[in-house]
Length: 281
Image 1 (cartoon, rainbow, N blue to C red):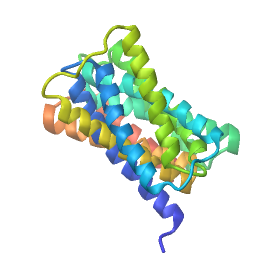
Image 2: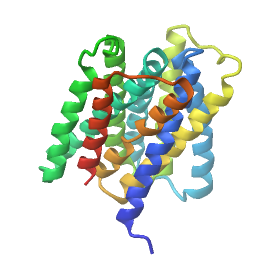
Image 3: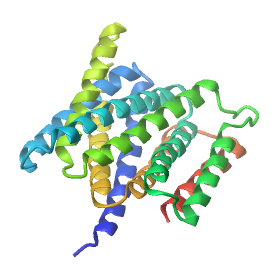
Image 4: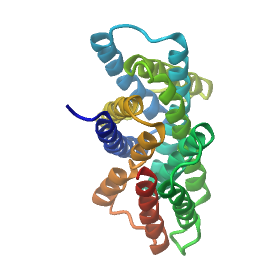
């Protein structure tokens, strides 16, 4: 029988792989269209998939409070996703993804610090290294220095995802699928209202549906894997492992777009990876 902690770690890593690949697909689709439109349609596709899974495999609805937490998680998650897709579309994937991941990791770790007390020595060291990574990623480096828009959107994405982790941890304490359905429903409503108010609601560009569908499916898979990781293990461990998602995003950006970063930014990317590993120990 598989140890629950081992299964939680596995689910956390699976969520990172799925989210990273989904972010690449969503960012690629956003380069040829409106990021908000991409988010809305990817959320719709993922929401249909989640509803079908919940109807087939979930026996009963969890308490209303957990569904509300799921809805709040969805609102913050979609704000983070919008910031990330916009950053990936307008900026460099190899820079926006890791910087947002550091912020994503720090938010739930700070929450755990106040709720559960001081973490161990490795995690405290990881905090310090994470702060250094943010400095290296954000500091000037010739032509490769970070642009204000890249920094702003990365911070928005990281904050949104970090709050998603916190609320989803509470929502998934008794069930996983229905809270995720609530999260997706809230996200769809928020995006639809935002697009309607700004008069940007329109069909996605031709030729982008495949990437939008892929982004929705992979995002759903990542959400489900994270929900299981948080359900089986600690929030901080699940959040940190899930925050490794830039690894697949950066790899795909390098393979497809041949993106280049300055030495200082590459050092920041490497430092961010070290920080995430230290925090996960």
